[in-house]
Amino acid sequence: MLTYLDNNATTRIAPEVLAAMRPFLEDRFFNPSSAYECARGPADAIRQARRTVAAALGGVAPDEVLFTSCATESLNAAIFGAVRANPARRHLVTSAVEHPAVLEVCRDLARDGLEVDFLPVDRAGRLDPRAVVRAVRPDTLLVALMHANNETGVVFPIADLARLTKEIDPSVLFLTDATQTMGKLPLDLTGELAAVDLFAFSGHKLHAPKGVGALFVRRGARVRPFLIGGHQESGRRAGTENVAAIVALGAAVERAQRTRDADEIRIRGLRDRLEAGLLASLPCVEVNGAGAERLPNTLNLSVHFIEGEGMLFELNRAGICASSGSACTSGSLEPSHVLRAMQIPFTAVHGSIRFSFSRDNTDADVDRVLAAFPEIVRGLRRLSPYWDPAHDRPRPEAEPMMRG
Ligand code: PLP
Image 1 (cartoon, rainbow, N blue to C red):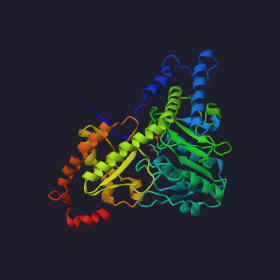
Image 2 (cartoon, rainbow, N blue to C red):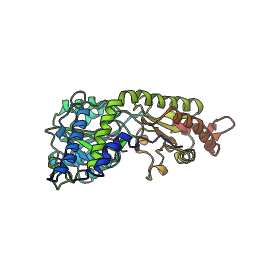
Image 3 (cartoon, helix red, strand yellow):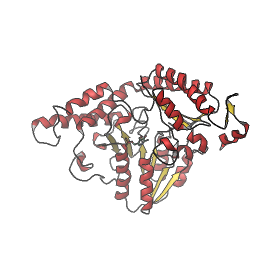
Image 4 (tube, rainbow, N blue to C red):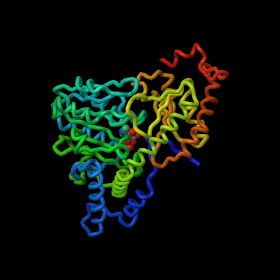
């Protein structure tokens, strides 16, 4: 039996989503641009999915929604498209904790000579709205800030940040990466989020398949097309549509709309029980992002004096999937840039572990982690020269390491 607690990485396709997409991989395989009668079904299905997504975003116009291949493409399209459409403006504002799909694009543009401010966050992962106000200049083109952080679940007050940006200069474009909030939080681009111009997300974080995403582009926002070729998506994103995946995205969004409130309460309950149980049974463990508003499904812990890699290895042996911000496990040579930006001590970043829930999780998953994880941590700490296993606490000379 597998306990899957890595839902911020990806989620399982929901059965009804799979059922909705399946016909478009089988009998209804036609190219939606073709002229014959049977291609009309796929074209209508895309139209319906677009209406569903537009409605879920607070009733935006369907033609403000573009389908893409993933959030990374949506974010690249938004940023590069904005830069190409507004060549007179050369300054971007973002944060130090964005996903690489934003950070690396901004770094790439900085290499081309654009100026980028990477705003810092505090120890809880919060962004000071005054820093955004201070950063916006007459030549600012775009402010790109994520809605919720994928590693810590910390939520930025995007509605306020977008409003403040527009109060300084209504012509500055505001982009938000909503990859971790779509389907989890209510999102109203005609109400609370009316100052957001560009809004990106991926299907596979909300129980649709990988390979589909969307970008909302508010009418009037100056953004040049990113993929150029055919006339698909009204000429704003060329390439034959991934019909089945787009249908799946529509079905997943519709399902999330229907069940989100009930899911949120249940998921928060599971996450809170895990958090309280682990904090009660293990000393020298801290919640990263504590004190900030956090997504209800995410728990990021620093377990002092051990490595994330060891924890993941042992969890994996116990049939539990989680993730870590330690360097060896994150696929890069550097440990989590998010936790480092939060000024979390190096050793605590290496000992970070993230459990992320979805509606597929149950109390049994929490019970399994509570049964397995404290023992795993005790076992690994016994191997640490900094830990005193007899008293289950750090050796006195090691205590300053926790403060960095
Ligand atoms: N933005 C955030 C906040 C994410 O969590 C992710 C994926 O983890 C992405 C962007 C990129 O999504 P994708 O890999 O689907 O393009």
